[in-house]
Amino acid sequence: MITRSKSPVRMLPWALFCMACATPPAPTGLAKEQLTQDFQVFRNAFEEGHPGLYRYSSKADMDHVFERASEALSGTMTLDQFYRVLSKVTAAVNCGHTRLLPTAEMTSRLEQSEFPFDVRVIDGRVYILHDYSTEDDRMKGSEVLSVNGHQIDQLLGAMLQSVEGDGRSATQRGYRLGHDGEFAGMLKLICEIHSPFQVKLRRSSGEVLVVGSVGMPLKILKNLAGRRYGPPPSPLRAATLTFMDEDRIGILTVYGFGGMAGLLTPLNRFFDNSFRQLSKRATKSLILDLRDHDGGQPELGEQVFSYLASEPFLYYKDLILNARSFSFFKYADSDKPIPGNLVKLGPDAKYHHTAHANWGIQQVRQPHFGGDIFMMLNGGSFSVTAELLAMAKSKTKAKLIGEESGGVFSGNTSGMKYDVKLPNSKIVLRVPVVAKYLAVDESKQPMDRGVIPDYPVHYSIGDLVSGMDKEMAVALELARKAH
Image (tube, rainbow, N blue to C red; front, top):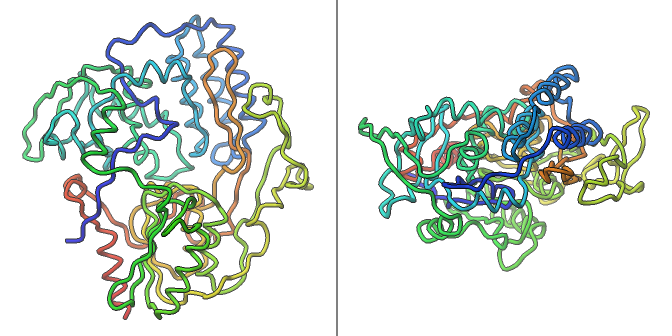
């Protein structure tokens, strides 16, 4: 059985709101006029700055979403209540790079008591992958049926209305809820559930029981995760290359398109060296592992693709901005307009990011890899990673193995961004301002879905607990059959 090393619980900086508080102090209230002002800044930031606002929904539909949210602002509201209103709007934009960030006060208040279970969402159900409430990981593999008396399907439904994700990807929102503490955070902010927790579980044996547990401080939880499962991936080890079957199979694993690899080797140089090694060893099949990989620098994604392409190619079909400057600058982390030498105003009255390194015809790099290509992906394959997957599916004979990617086939809205701090609540809206459209073949698959694999792989919670690596097993079987 091929197994995969278990990932630790990763707590990203933007997800520090993912804690539940047992006895939180009363949140600060905001008057109706303060809420109205903040909401207008919030809406203007989207309508002025976000070039993908109507990418997956019509203007009429988004106007309806904004209007319903505005109508929900009645009387005095707490920060948490206002956050819940805004989160539904942010999620409705269907942009995984757009973020709604809690205030420093919210983060400080909420980080005191974390839900002590690492969960995974599978087929609309929630399972415990790691149990930090016990020393022996006793409840791992159990299905969560309810938390504090609230049925899990109701909780999950509320969360899915508030979590950001790209387009119509069938995997990204569930993946995000099952990683980086997102489920725990939404228990508090979206579902208003606090420690102590009463969790109704179904064990793999079928036994149903209720487990009581108090929340844990984030620092303690992270220490526990590190001791049990090791530290998170290091940016000094962003990629690895290994060989199997007397060099006939090469396995290039990329953890992030940024950082270093090998002996402090810049990643672009590491990729150059890797493809030279593949050529020197006459490797027949390349397995490219892009699972649980949320992106990085677009130039590095294009670099890897350039070794797989057989002829010069367009990477981006277009890169669009609404404007160079915006009225929300006075609330943003920067008031500097987009430099004029980076963009050109087109006949469509939009700006186009013509100075981007991936703009225009791109050349193939040598040595070209002409063997069989197998790429592994899942709901964590996002942003630049999904771009590379989409281009490979569109323009090469690569076989894709795993589950639908989190990032969408047509591209994403990312690149340059502004953090807009709402003047009264201090909640931050992160607005990406470059809409990226990949030069992919629209006949290959739906444009608004994640990249769809050729060989779908499905996991049960038992597979995850045991550390099985199903994608690698399929990839190796296909690679060996090819030769």
